[in-house]
Length: 267
Image 1 (cartoon, rainbow, N blue to C red):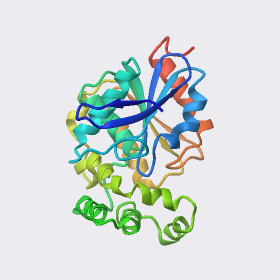
Image 2 (cartoon, helix red, strand yellow):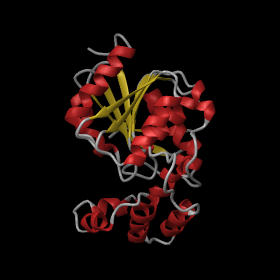
Image 3 (cartoon, rainbow, N blue to C red):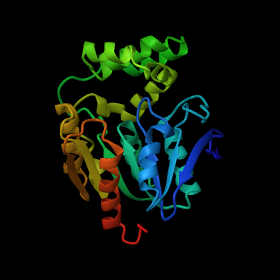
Image 4 (cartoon, helix red, strand yellow):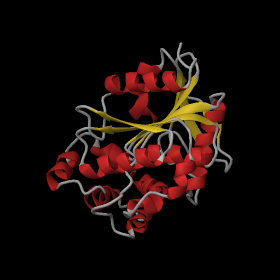
């Protein structure tokens, strides 16, 4: 497995597959590069697809103290390793990270953003939720961190939490519990309601703002608000999808968009 070194010295593990122009994928909470491997495989006939473990996950290091700017530098390093500039697809907090990268001026040619979980109204998480998650991580209280995220941040219903606790995936969620505060930091003040920053309207990259037609209303509201704010954005609601979309459904949507806005980027 290849690695690269981010500017602060952190080792970042990544993989690439396929032939053609570069495409970078980044992930959200409880995810690592393996989560998007099926999507990468479906896109590999058109692109050289780069997936990576965000810091603190999988094969990547985790140099303290955490800062969002360091994650932006990690993304920049992956784009550089790809031979960039390159388009970027991000899911959930990974979508927020991809947008942060574009706003920081990274060499990103187009964005596809799937349900960045901004809160533009309604119920918000506790103001101190990042501090609470950080404390859980420092104390090794991984189960409590995951339960707190699900109940107090995501507001998942109790039956869903019980189902997850008994599922084979719970151990993997606990393994990444220390990175939940990182996801929260990337969201910043956009977790607490109110309009998205007006200055984002200066970001003119071609952007596909994606969401599931079956996603909860708060996520759909966030997708709508983001698409309305970004001047070069289009919105697409995927029938039958929720916060997760089957890769066989998502891959052709991404390929169609990137081919349309970046002529010559499909083989």
